[in-house]
Amino acid sequence: MTRKYNFCAGPAALPEPVLAQARDEMLDWHASGLSIMEMSHRSAEIVAIAEGAEASLRRLLSISDDYAVLFVQGGASSQFAAAPLNLAAGNARVDYVNTGQWSKKAIAEAKRFADVNVVATAGDTNFSTIPAFDSWQLSDSPAYLHYTPNETIGGVEFFWTPEVNAPLVADMSSTILSRPVDVDRFGVIYAGAQKNIGPAGLTLVIVRRDLLGKASDGCPAMMDWKVAADNDSMYNTPPTYGIYLAGLVFAWLEEQGGLAAMESFNRAKAEKLYGAIDGSDFYANPVEVQSRSLMNVPFTLADSALDKTFLAESEEAGLLNLKGHRSVGGMRASIYNAVGEEAVDALLAFMQDFEQRHG
Ligand code: PMP
Image (cartoon, rainbow, N blue to C red; front, side):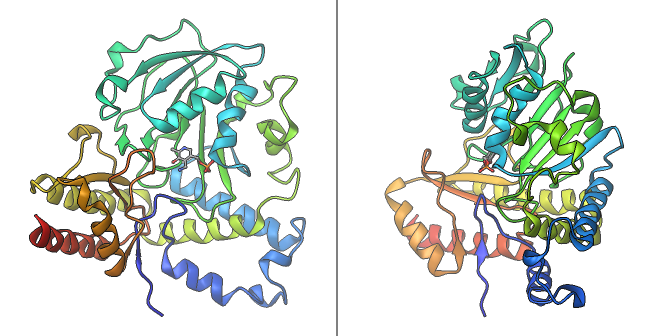
């Protein structure tokens, strides 16, 4: 077996020890005689697995009892609708920051259910910056302010938390668990699992309990956070295998030393990669230096006619999924928690060699 280096933006690389444990436990979990996938979600085993996963996540992020942790479905995209449906009943005013493609999708969806005010947009810099906080046109008393702490496509990340007089709602899909976060600063944090949490199909919502029970009348039960919270995320059949795998990932993160350790590890990887890009005339990254994502590193080649060759040769070298998002082209290396330093080193060696041959 030769596992290759995976730079996919999601579904992304998973820690190999987690995959190996899942393989070993696949047919007969802990002498139960069943696979996790075959167990009732009401069984003692699955309830314990879900409770264990939640407890581990709470330790990693220091989540207090003031917050409910929900394991739901539908991806982060469903939460684009769930946020206004839960918090903006009666077409309430809501504030959104537009820092790129995922913000735009969240805004478009929110407009179906709420009175959306876009407080700032980075459109004038082609989404390579974060608009300065003092330029934001905040509403007087919005139901919440939504932003995207890490734009997966543009590779733009907030390293500060907005200070506003409204609950903060954050789409942390591609930054969650990459470094510590002060959960108490947020009303709601949500994330699709398929980057730093586990397999696609599971969605995480962390919601301050005082924000539960405000959903609009038309909110479907499956999107109502209170319904999920009241039923311990088992209102319907939850994605049991995804929850199990997420639990293994959380345990792996705790073994690595938690999120402070992940932050230094992730910073070291990102610095290496940005350093190499900046040190060359052949590669370029368009994002302002202080907002460069630790997780998603887009880059272009000096001559885009070489893109196809770069992708073909990198794949040949065992470096997979380096193609930039279809909407922007170029390249993108996603270096989530499970992408090791050796993967980044292999990518850098390939990039240097490619530049020497084609530059
Ligand atoms: N938000 C962000 C920041 C993302 O990166 C993605 C997926 N790449 C989404 C939302 C959409 O997530 P999902 O596919 O889970 O709906």
